[in-house]
Image (cartoon, rainbow, N blue to C red; front, side, top):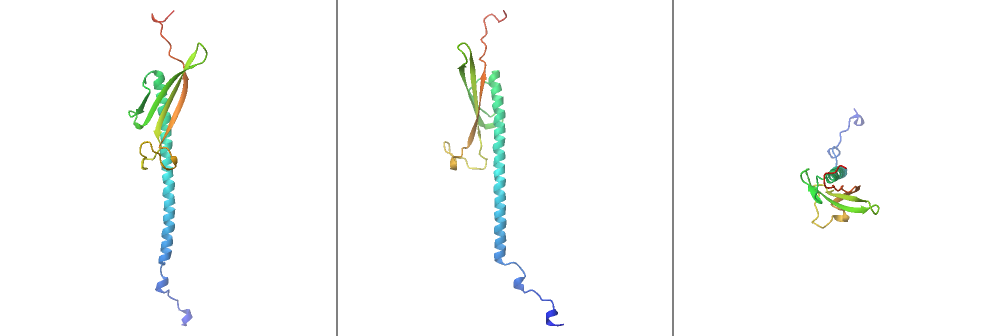
Length: 158
């Protein structure tokens, strides 16, 4: 056999990856994982905010019906009994004259609810996060309703 026909063996120095190649691979994988983590975190935050909005709409409709039915007589409160202690509500009633002899009541009900993800640091009371991002949102509904009918003495039928 001639020298050229023999299989050549790789030298030990060429057998593996260099330290520079390993570091480059680690950096690439790290950047990819960080990007993935940030995307997932943003998706979780969006899901939490969307869920809070959905719950706020449901609680707002419920509170309006309670006020209209006379079940709720207060003008503000929270939803501790419903399992949402950070959600608060407020209502105002104002008489609106339609004509000289006829009026309706404008009922305004607002619900304030948190939009921050639980793991984020909350600002001190009265402060806001960087970039003036609020830590809560308010959902308001205005409704015109007929004023309550005055009962006539003697029981009513003519």
